[in-house]
Image 1 (tube, rainbow, N blue to C red):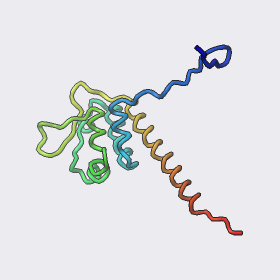
Image 2: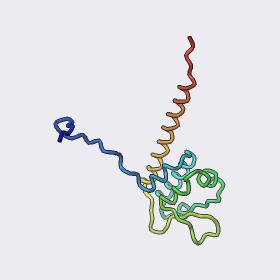
Image 3: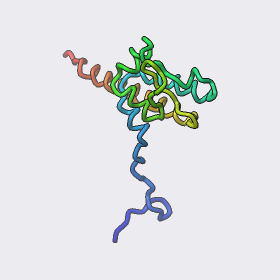
Amino acid sequence: MLCTMGYAGYVSAKYPPPKPSEAEAALMQVKSEAALEIIGKLLYNAAVAPKEEKYRRIKLTNPKIRETVVEATGGVDALRALGWVEDPEAPEDFLMVPPGLYFSMKEVRMVEAQKERLQKEARRNSSKNLAGMVTVQA
């Protein structure tokens, strides 16, 4: 058996990236930076003040939430994958963090990572578009 060896005879440690968690996969479906910004703020507030009830509930009919998160592809699914559930006691559409579930900065960093991926993808696409528009005149 022939094995490619790296420095000092060690086998190269290039492993494939780990499979994303359910929450990471759901966040990857969100293609709106504005939605990710709001989701990040909601998670940050719930992580920093976990006992504060106002940060543990989201009114989905709120105009800002509806425009940015609810109407964005995958926005509500991402919240559910992160742990938010329907509030059974609310008369309107509310999501809540169930008792006993607390967020950490890990979830906030997951949202930030997805925002960075989107920004990188947008820069790559815009540079491709610009490259296609440039013509050489002789």
